[in-house]
Length: 200
Image 1 (tube, rainbow, N blue to C red):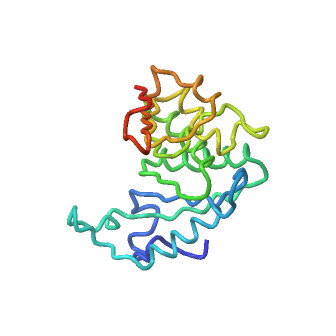
Image 2 (cartoon, helix red, strand yellow; image 1 turned 90 degrees about the vertical axis):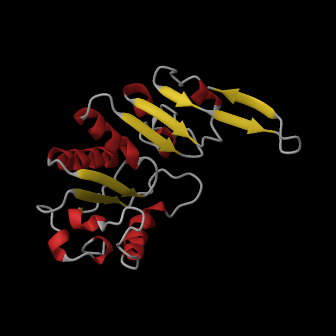
């Protein structure tokens, strides 16, 4: 990462000791199957952050006064499994320091390690997934750490709420555990507007 801190905030708010918030960039794009380029996301995000106002109108605050530390990027890409392990370790390290940890990056598979870390540190974890795809495959393309498996582990070990799902494979339907997943889907006929299917 070429950026030394988030949003160009003053150094007094960017150090780890004084920060309550930690941002972890993960420029990874190892398992994407359609279009590549997700690994460029963190750099673009940080570049854009340097050109925005830091005052929030709705809350009448400047959140960066709580301190925002930009952690070293997780750049492990030797395998999907190695990347997930590296994300898990980095995330857990900062949770243990009592930081508000946020990851940004690359593709959906970076979520696996971070969710695992939070699940190990907090009881009864709930995960909110806002996505067009279910990402509930147990394994895909030879790996359980593929982007198509991003929330499978969460579905089995945490409380998973999925919002906006419009596409899934038939094998993912059987993975749904009604005790752990709230999946709400509606399809409507484009011409009549009549409800076609609704599942709660």
